[in-house]
Image (cartoon, rainbow, N blue to C red; front, side, top):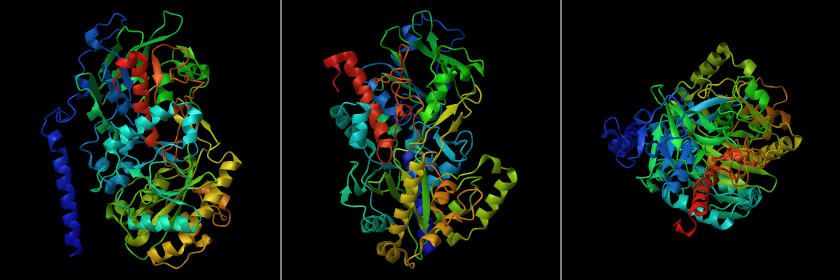
Length: 593
């Protein structure tokens, strides 16, 4: 009977996906025509040129060229297209027909896919933590855990944004792609345990960032189907927008004949490797806008000739503008997890409930991904799916032999090994920062990134506090009643977590005795990295690149901190916010937004 129900469930999912993707499949080579007629493959771009010319015609020019169709780029493009011609250049494909992107049940498989065309591009920081970058239209909203929340009010004040416009921009996003989750039983037990551990009051379902325990929004609907930033393009003016997928921008082009370098356009390659150029109109208010993310934008600036002198000189990149701050101040919110065993089956759930503590730590939870045969058995290479995160592997230990041993251990795991879930604790506003450096001039290759996790002792102390809080949550009667397990000791919990096969870091003998060592040895990421193009150092408060004309940045590379418990809501809002702000500055009352 159970096998029949399982087969029926899989058939239902396949049917939903087939119905969802049918319009795209029916369109032949241009399978985006159904709902998004402005989305084309990069090879369809006719305006290629072998030489730069500032006298480009109106036919081949745009008011705005947005590099990166991600979390900020999509709402930004949809907004600007209401009044001006917009070209979006996205290096990845579309998310609509990708089953690994579209369904919650495949969340971990999307992360484990390291093929060159996957939606997720892994990178490894010099700290030894494997991380991920989005490589798909819709950006990080296509590969993340889906949790949606607004920023804390202090963040909005610190960045100097117009609070009224911020409060208009969040709902614009929420009405289109955000859902109230159907609370999983695991998440309900987690909520009660947070309150029992003192993370109070209970604030119910809310988008707001409030101390205590709350249920947030989600990108996943009741069918477990993901909605992404790409769907915000449905709000665009289709006559004014062109979106090219598999369009990899090589660099920004500048006119350097004036006092300040002036962005003129970009060079990009299509899916066949052919190069093209796209230009801005000659209007002084036209702009190239970088929305490549906290890894891609500093990299793009340097490849375009804007960055530290030594960085450009070592790769013989012709300098357009010297700025020693590009790529500096990179930060990632460190996260650690504690395994929760259970003697009962639990459904898969990603983050729905969060505990916002007053000690600078957030507590979240996920469950049930170890029940899937695919999760345990499929080839993940050096990735760990059980916690929905990517593993931690020190560079010196990343040998072919170590990787093969890791894969064997994973395949040998009993199916029942991960029936439970994980409590996740992460640090808010880490003080420790690092830097980004170019490895070569190939935009397809990841730059070198260092985050310096726990370099500042205050960050390490907060991790210790977070682990203690996570242990209290797990030991609560609400969790033990739900999991049907005896109240575990902290040492037993840490032992299970250290042995959970989440990384290849050599274990220390005091991992379960010293919480500080546990934090250092089991640190992972939740993809909230930011910085590299800070306000006042690389961009001005309007996010225009200092020392240039017609070049702006709209993404998390400008952040000094990751907003709220999870940044995607604020990055989505940022795209809408900056789009409206640009239009109102340019058009005044004529901008009907």
